[in-house]
Amino acid sequence: MGTVIPLKKSANSAYLELKNLLNDKLVKVEELIELKLESKVPLIEKMSAHHFKSGGKRLRALLTLGSAKMAGYELGYRDINLATCVELIHSATLLHDDVIDESELRRGQKTTNSIWGNQSSILVGDYLLSRCFEIMVDDGDLEILKLLSSTSAKIAQGEVLQLQHRGEADLLEDTYIKIISMKTASLFSAATRTGACLAGSESKEKSALESYGKNLGLAFQIADDALDYYAKELVFGKEIGKDFYEGKTTLPLILIFQRANDEEKEFLKETMTKEKKTEEDFSETLALINKYKAVEESLKRAEYFVNVSRDALSIFENSEEKRILQNLTDFSLGRSF
Image (cartoon, rainbow, N blue to C red; front, side, top):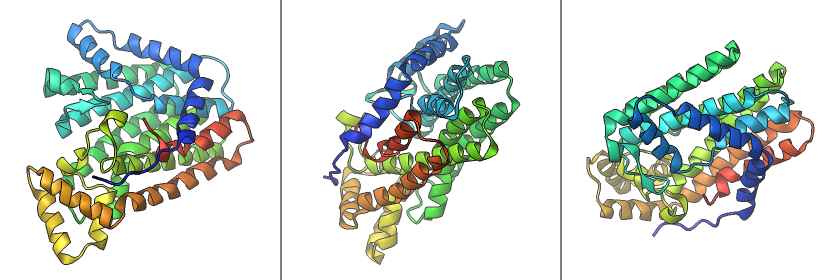
């Protein structure tokens, strides 16, 4: 079995505090998402509803709303509209991810592609993106339009870069950081910078919130990748060893390769290039993960980004929103859902 990492109740409470603070707005985001899922093609509505009913933390929407509130946005519904937009981008990428990874489970439920097939899932993901762009055009802010459209491009580039390096046991840590910066951190930073744009903040505040989101996203993804080697599916809805079996080289594997002897490196190279990996392969890899304490070391790396994220908000005046957003950085490491 893998390493058992104790989970922090306080980390979860920070997320719940943010959710409770913004609950009224989040309800409106959910309503707008439901509205945007409407289609004259019944299958699109059915597949979209299935995907969204599987849950999700709506963390990126909350980051958009929370950043806007902290930065001083008060009047109107633009924050709700753009938080919806960010969430639609995220959901579209998840639909595409599941096809690329041939996933059968997400958040403990069957994926849309496992039920309706890859072609329909790709097209429904595209549909969600198109609805998002409708929201951005209606909003009319060219800065935000440029920000979110370029973010969509970064996410796609990150996916391709990850595919390009799939199966590489000797992947450089810098390349891994580049991949997750594009795939995950880019949307986190876009969400938080959008909040600053909505509030009409100065360039310095926009950059600070962008840095907060980027580093939070990096910490979140590193911790998520570490989950692959110790999470319980019942708690997280994540298949154990999913990244491993898909040939994704994440930080725990990178760290053990850096520390492994020649024989262990050869095993990792051979294993990661296999088209089909066995449970025995995973068990042997897990033994190396534990031997070199790769999960703990990965979380230490993530903690660095947590601290950078928290410190980025120091330029803002003290407020309830600032306190919650700063505390939220611990959620990326200690969450239990």
